[in-house]
Amino acid sequence: MIDVLYFAWLRERIGTNRERVMTSAATVAELVAELEARSEGHALAFADKTSLRVAVDQELAGFSAPLTGVREVAFFPPMTGG
Image (cartoon, rainbow, N blue to C red; front, side, top):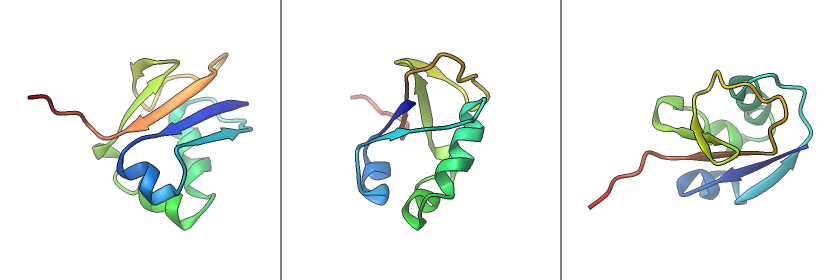
């Protein structure tokens, strides 16, 4: 089981800020493909992957990051500071 966290507009499109997911995905990209199939909201949230960032166990990662031993994956839009 992996905890999947959603922030900002992803949370709004999917309708929750957290899901516990049973997955056979080997990478973040494979997990995203599974999530997109869950609902229309998920598909909409992941439609433009270039506008997403991902953290694996609270470390920034890419979509090719492996999921072996991972407990948490978070998705969020790019941040801007000021």
